[in-house]
Length: 204
Image 1: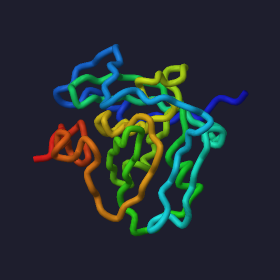
Image 2: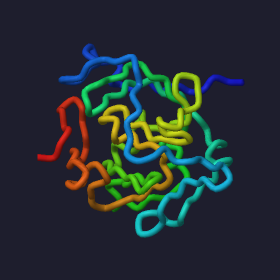
Image 3: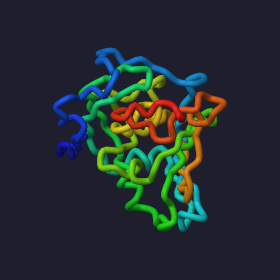
Image 4: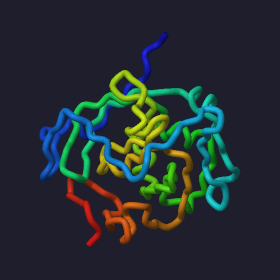
């Protein structure tokens, strides 16, 4: 069996890997809204929303998604609460693999990630398709734990960890940015982008 291609997040090459006001932790706290959803491989799918910015709906069943080419990703993770877990080794499907399989209109500039329980988070398209952005299925040699997003979570290492949404089920491309769950004023008003290096935690 051939080794998987490995992506190394550029942030891990920084001389100072901890963003401002972050502390390193060896633990991996599980923080989420709502109950951990039940996973049924017979009914699970991942859907790319169709028009107006994708030419046709694309839906992956669990076997189809598992069969996509995989990569490994070495990256740090920074939680908005102030803890950083350095040196994670993820395994999953690069978001670039999705881009290779659908036709996205040039008007699309943002993406909304839809998850179980109605959870959502928004991202600029450039962050979603960054070279170290993946749909993770495993972490440090094991399947993701259910409370860490099993079966599939998004991993966007350069942004705060709430952007690495758990239990992903849908992807919607947008022309204009709009707030997701945590970014909305009624759920905390978190920053629309969430850059840990500029401490973009809350919208002001």
